[in-house]
Length: 124
Image (tube, rainbow, N blue to C red):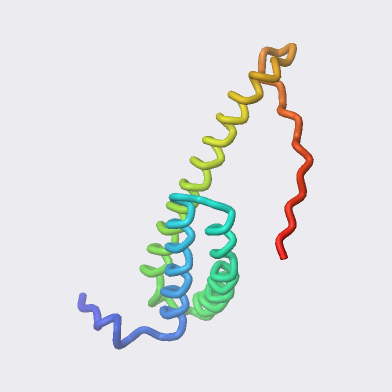
């Protein structure tokens, strides 16, 4: 089975997937060393990626099967981002438990919930 050069046969849907994958790659990089600012900077790109994926979804529904391999690559990219998010959430849950233990324990033996600090930060 021969494949043509992907650079010359990429249609708008393939370019849309490429754009979406680029935005996901930037999100994964931000998740590797997260700060609120780096994550926030990814949000407009993720909105654009969602729009690209809507167009790709319509193309696939219309019978375009040429982009299946690229969709699988995107799926792997998203799985990597999902793992980074899950690991980050587990890390912060662990710290919440450690800090909660300073507040005591519940009758069931679990760390007590930390009281939420009431802060408001406004930039402008």
